[in-house]
Image (cartoon, rainbow, N blue to C red; front, side):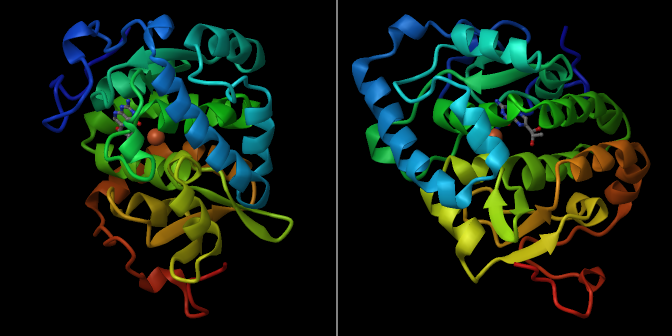
Length: 286
Ligand code: HBI
Ligand code: FE
């Protein structure tokens, strides 16, 4: 079951597109895969092939390996089929949701190894940019790493921390960690900067910007720094955090209970800003 952790069910922005009236109390609804139009599958395939072409050069090997184990090329995935594949690999299940769901419900699903995936797909004129996450972001961006046991465990641990963070008023630092790890994380592989974050790999512009542009700051992943780092939700990221291995993310989960209260009381770092703790050698390691 899903706990309502901060006492309010509706911490959602106004004007979301999804059909929230059709959702159950845990915010899931049936995917109804047979109801997608041919045009919707066409939109998926255009997005899929555009991103697939970028992956060999820009995506982490774990993401590419994961995507190769999923049958995502032909059209919008059927969650029932993808879930049986995932359950066999890592025990995760995809659940359909109308779109963004409240923090408490979201963390509750992750803690149970249920990954919420938005049911609807963007319109053809929105291929390059969309404000709310749609099925392409959620499924193409997030599901490949759910096939990888180490990352699958990190995400469940993250979900479990939601309740604790809500209790001490530290959901904001916890959300910053999700953003800079699950959504916009970079990893160094054989000396190259590669993306594993879903917000990067579901966007063609962000994929190139995050890994190759000279503009952004690329900082070594440091969980204290991450927990204080604010971000833009509607522009290319000015700062990314780079891990050397997914084991660093495990480490962050282990340290988090002690660090959340500290981060809650610390001064936030504005999007793209430097911090004295970044070190005199200069922040960029990319
Ligand atoms: N809902 N569907 C959906 N997808 C998300 O990524 C999501 C959410 N609700 C809340 C939420 N993320 C945030 O709390 C995360 O930043 C942790
Ligand atoms: Fe996402």
